[in-house]
Image (cartoon, rainbow, N blue to C red; front, side):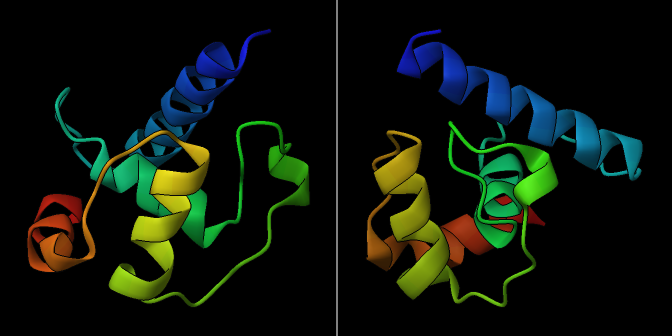
Length: 87
């Protein structure tokens, strides 16, 4: 599977998990699934069984994780927008 497909698959899986937990996620909201992936330290190649719980800071940890592993282009000064979209 290509990296782009792995990325999409992990984002879909994270969205499904959040929906199963009762969180309503709009089709345009990528922040919530990316946040879950960062908090669980799940890269596109990683299995959910290997997830670990992490306490992370939006601008110093979550945004860089999303940018590095999920081809996002969030800037650290978008922290407040990122936080609002995740809610």
